[in-house]
Image 1: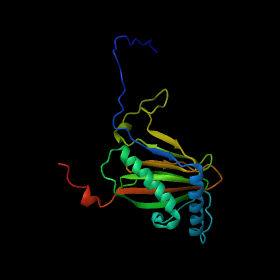
Image 2 (image 1 turned 90 degrees about the vertical axis):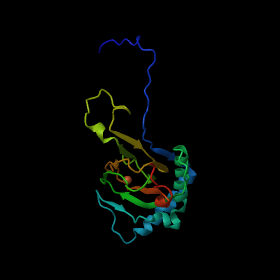
Image 3 (image 1 turned 120 degrees about the vertical axis):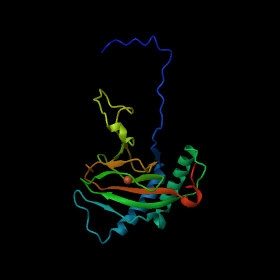
Image 4 (image 1 turned 45 degrees about the vertical axis):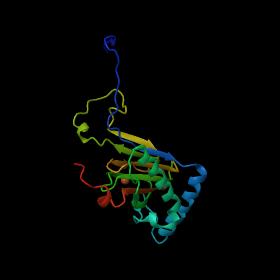
Length: 214
Ligand SMILES: [Fe+2]
């Protein structure tokens, strides 16, 4: 490597333009213990007549868990977090609703391919039961043009990577833009991994928000 001479530069800054956020909330232990116990009990009842999951298999519940009383604690944590995110984004409209909420149970060897959640503004995942080797989610670069040229790098950094791996644990609640593609690696533990996914959209979007901006 050439010895660098920066003496000709007065100042130099890297501007972070159009950053993509993943909101990462960790619930207090006493809080998630109670929430998770209720969720696990409700899911067990839903699956009572189903066979246990085999290696590589996953199960998804119906998409309306947010309407069930047993998920009330979780729903209020989601609403509380969304409120914080909307405030951070300086969005002057806070009438939102959960449009879908469902459980994912993944046995050893089960993974989830890359996908996004169209027709929503925010999406998220809450982690009920994670294990070492089953405690990450991958987020993929939303700037598809950036994949055209990928020179080799000496070290992966936030500026040159096309994938960010976020580590999660029981009681972690993530919120991200619904357009952000994500995937889950194969469960490499022997235990089932349980998470609850949800989507959020502005209420009465057409009436209140989708007016032309020009
Ligand atoms: Fe997802």
